[in-house]
Image 1 (cartoon, helix red, strand yellow):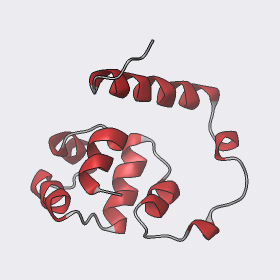
Image 2 (cartoon, helix red, strand yellow):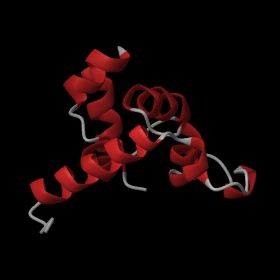
Image 3 (tube, one colour):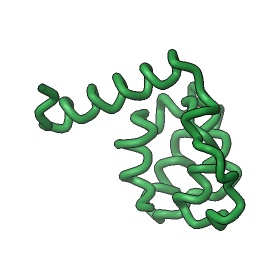
Length: 102
């Protein structure tokens, strides 16, 4: 996955917001985006800070082989509230990016 796409479309935070949430310096995040190389430890830290599954995100970036993911349905591991939040976040992001939500 492309680092810039991940930060803007999946994480939906600016480098400054990531710094506030994770204490990873803004310049570090900017540099890693520019190099398209976010290390595994930062992917884990950022994913946890914004409520994403760090294992899924490591697979997405190729840091972890998908065979290590449990075969269970990942939706079974989250609450209804978390599912609704994620759905709303994606719908808002889609609308913000010029997509049609309705």
